[in-house]
Length: 327
Image 1: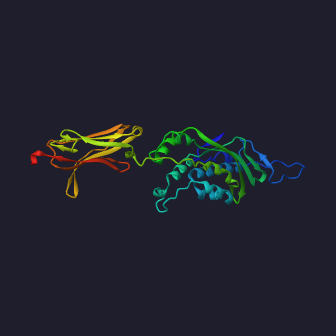
Image 2 (image 1 turned 135 degrees about the horizontal axis):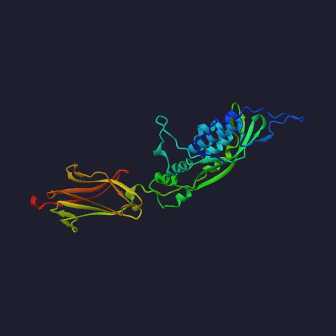
Image 3 (image 1 turned 180 degrees about the vertical axis):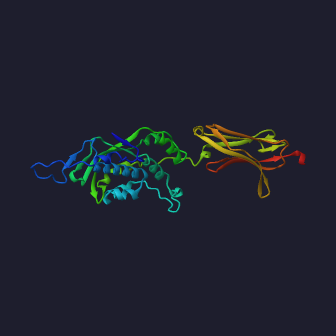
């Protein structure tokens, strides 16, 4: 079977050398009509067959990329219209070429990710071409990754990006076989029944639940340490404070990437006494960080927080410190 990933086009170097074949000698019968079908031996690939296979590859590539512009050149208008109605197209910034991510719904992003896994195989011996090369057909198996195995694997996802990461690891595929019909249009072949391919975009059951970020998995937090008084929720004569953050059961499935900071209120501003280096915490069940200095902390209002480097969210705890030496 001729199998290729969609990003790879059929190489024509070897097959083009086989195209200098003479037409079969006619008998006393009338010359065949142009729409009479000639079955071609796979070992004797004609120039027309090579062009058809190349066109199939470009169509498959465009389907995976949701590339309407390319499909307009390869399909008849009526078939393309049916395809476009189901195609999960993400608009891009015309100046930068970057996706307009802020305007894209998660569902559309996920459908586009599934489409990007589309591959194809041409079925051996299925090519049929009319004499004189005005039309042809070939059976093609289109596949995409079995996304439902990912949908059913978790209750919630940390954004479409996590869905896509899991999807790339899926080996099973969903397969569809179609007979594609082509006709000669000028110097190229175009697909006349593109509408049958709409089924490969019919994956609407992707209304997934998402976390807003890792901090959605925080259940509670508190501070403690030497000199802590639970009744007043304040510290007295201390140089060390601990921050504990309790996480839910989802947190252990992720790698947390964060920093922490210990700050003191200074009028209308905050005085940063300490900002940690980046911390990579693999599959935590809780977060525990400690700030310590040589001398007791001066009296004041303090904030101890952690900072998610991905979502740029902060989670922390505010409290007061009293130093008796200050009177």
